[in-house]
Length: 158
Image 1 (cartoon, helix red, strand yellow):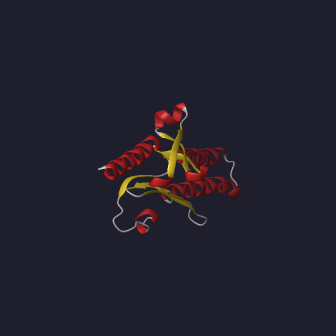
Image 2 (cartoon, one colour):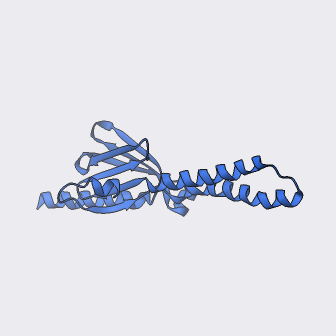
Image 3 (cartoon, helix red, strand yellow):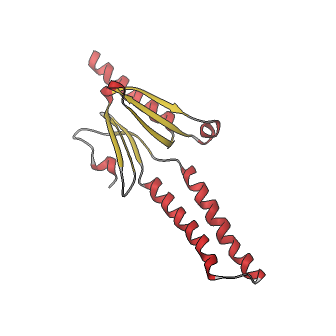
């Protein structure tokens, strides 16, 4: 069970969910591919030492760590709050009631806009800021917060 699902309140439902972007896998995958592909070249050249296996092992370990990091991240907008959690052994979680959110800033580079990732900064009442990097679909997260907040304010007015 994910962090979000395990911490929902009574009557609370998830409106939008995302995680860290897959771009964090690119570097470790490239490193692992290059080091693994170098093995046949070294064998064919007659240059071989068992220590050569350290680099591919490190590359595969880096891929595993990146996969675990991505899978353990959880970002959600519910009908009551915004919930964010990253980490496995050392976790960081933030839960902010929708009524306490003053602003959500989204920072995207050109590549981030093309691949749909970016950084978000959620500003709560009192000026507290919570920043998270490399979020997948940050604009949709912001729109979800705005749509749920608008729905609640219309319900209060009625």
